[in-house]
Length: 122
Ligand SMILES: Cc1cc2nc3c(=O)[nH]c(=O)nc-3n(C[C@H](O)[C@H](O)[C@H](O)COP(=O)(O)OP(=O)(O)OC[C@H]3O[C@@H](n4cnc5c(N)ncnc54)[C@H](O)[C@@H]3O)c2cc1C
Image 1: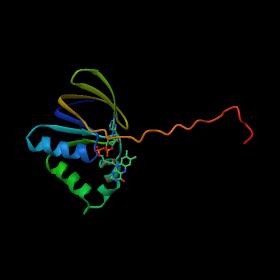
Image 2: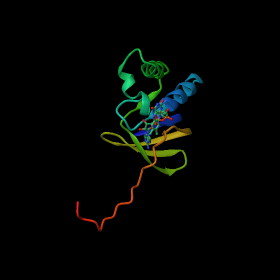
Image 3: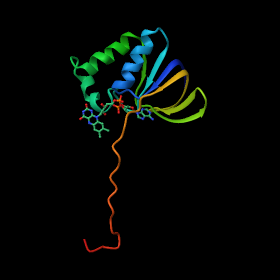
Image 4: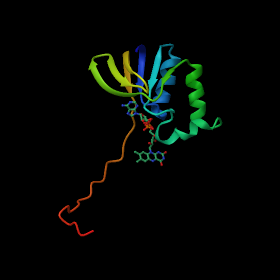
């Protein structure tokens, strides 16, 4: 499926939600893709279920501003400028945009421990 936006945001954490609201308030067509079933990112994902939480208020704001939230959709490739491919639950999306905002958050560095694989005593 092909979707086209003025502003496309990848990542539905606090940063992506704020960026989406800000862009939509300017009157442009905004899409927000996140690879989780619910937006909210690392700290707000569970909070979107509680209607009194800031996360839920932001989610409602995005709805009222007509931001198109595309959940369970992971962006995996940029085949050419202004275009991304993303994998949804049942199909591949082609997402076109005029402006792109990456709000994919941060990850803790993986701790790699040195393991002596020659020691098979345990
Ligand atoms: C290890 C760790 C511990 C933290 N602990 C705390 C804490 O205790 N308290 C606190 O206030 N803050 C904590 N933070 C910081 C917290 O993550 C940030 O404050 C906040 O979540 C950042 O918001 P964000 O929108 O930038 O990113 P995130 O909340 O990470 O949101 C990014 C979103 O983008 C999605 N995404 C990523 N790649 C793709 C892709 N290719 N396609 C589609 N979607 C994608 C992710 O699934 C996620 O939903 C912690 C961060 C880390 C890394």
